[in-house]
Image (cartoon, rainbow, N blue to C red; front, side, top):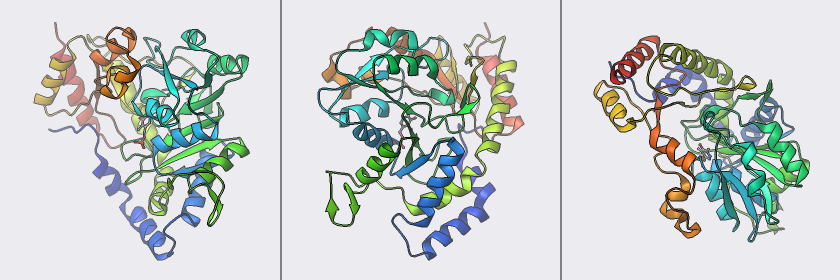
Amino acid sequence: MNTPFLDLGAAYRELQPEIDAAVVRSLASGCHIGGPEVEAFEGEFASYCGATYAVGVANGLDALHLALRAMDVGPGDEVIVPSNTYIATWLAVSQCGATPVPVEPDARTYNIDPARIEAAITPATRVILPVHLYGQPADMDPILAIARKHALKVLEDGAQAHGARYKGQRLGAHGDAVAWSFYPGKNLGAMGDGGAVTTNNAQLADRIRVLRNYGSRVKYVNEVQGYNSRLDPLQAAILRVKLAHLDEWNGHRKVFAHEYLSALSACLVVLPHAPEWADPVWHLFVVRHKQRDQLQEKLSEAGIGTLIHYPTPPHLQGAYAELGYGVGAFPIAEKIHQEVISLPIGPHMDMRQLASVISAVKHATRV
Ligand SMILES: *Cc1c(COP(=O)(O)O)cnc(C)c1O
């Protein structure tokens, strides 16, 4: 039996009549940029997140970038980012001409460690940018307290955490804004690229709306040098269908995650740890193992698809050679990157596939 890492075809098959109808409705509307599908999705997603505003953009990287621009981040500024994240978090900062300042994660949750943030703050710091990595909320209360104390803004990277709750409240507006990606493999994924920013701040929402559309509010009147970064109405129509199933699908992920947690508790892998205030949505089920590459190979031989999130931390990528960090600069992130492996998880796995992964992991990690 083959167990793919994630089966996106199954997601389409389950919703095909609804998705096909939404696509036809969008095409027939004659409105191919912006319009009613985008506006309806923005309203529905904002209300799902418990935020006042949602602004659709072209992808998750743009959501981060435009939100930072709207916060006036520019050259000479610093933004605090996790050392353990996908490179998009850092790139958004660099695209503003600002400098990402990495902070190490908590070794158990893999999310930014609030206790290490203050040491990284300088007079140039403008924003703290926590990531809700692997679908698990970052510890927002201490982060917000530090931000208040130093008069900093907080932008959250929610790309992996649609629907996750922190202390009972859905992510969406704990900080000043949250950037979302609807890349197909995310918990809420489009069938192409998409992104959004949610916020309770009317001015921020307005600035992002202007920035995503050539810096223009009124056609051919350009207030600022903006971008072309709009959420496609076809994708918005598809996202509306999928949003209605998000909680149910996150629920399936949770069942599988809890099965893994109990079945693998005696194995020689380090399991994910969710603090009691966290209600994660299990975008990824990430375990650690000292011989990660061998484990991945053995699982592959057993027909099980796994991925590494991520093999190389941003500070060791060629893209960030300019910052001059070498090996050893962020040892917690480096160790995590060397040992992590993501097991298959998704709303359309079945119990047989789950059992095969569990038995293969047990077999491969036997001493
Ligand atoms: C996917 C992802 C992004 C970027 O999203 P895109 O839509 O691919 O641009 C940003 N941050 C994190 C943590 C992600 O996982």
